[in-house]
Length: 114
Length: 112
Image 1 (cartoon, rainbow over the protein chains, first blue to last red):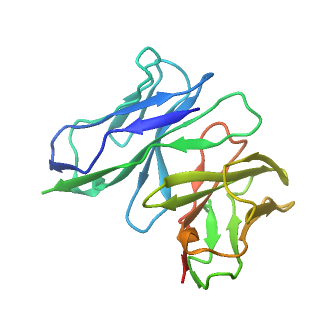
Image 2 (image 1 turned 180 degrees about the vertical axis):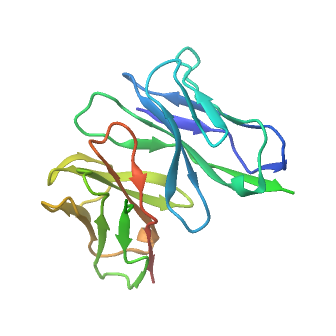
């Protein structure tokens, strides 16, 4: 079945450090890929998405490129801020089906200190 | 533009009781999905509704059910509550379900 694997956390960085959170997936068909972020006590917010191979999603300084050959969608940011501290989820959804379900990775906790 | 609204935010129920959670999607969004989030299992898909029809269902027992009304608002019901049903229940809406979902803040259910 379809699945998403994220790097284990927590990830602890100093402000202005470079961030990479690895995400790989297993899927049949042609999934869309997403990164969601969850702040304490809140729901999920869509951070960025990519719907086909080689697409690059970007938002608020975060980027991720849909790599079909390596089945990956790694999240990167050049300079993190304390306000980026949150839990990040990689997810996929199958395209082309009448019904859609998001399949999530386990989440990676990011902690940024000043 | 109002976001996805879930009510109530917090709920405490006793084992064996039943509970109904409510979700109002973003105006114009016809697809509504429900997810359960727990520390052990992470985020798991419960079901998706589109135009009042359930078109996708996750691997949960029949105690978990839902419905969608003509105005796209959705409810989720859990009967015969178990301690393991304690979780954050998240509702998400989308125009059609393929291009990403907007999530609500969730309902935190505690079963005692």
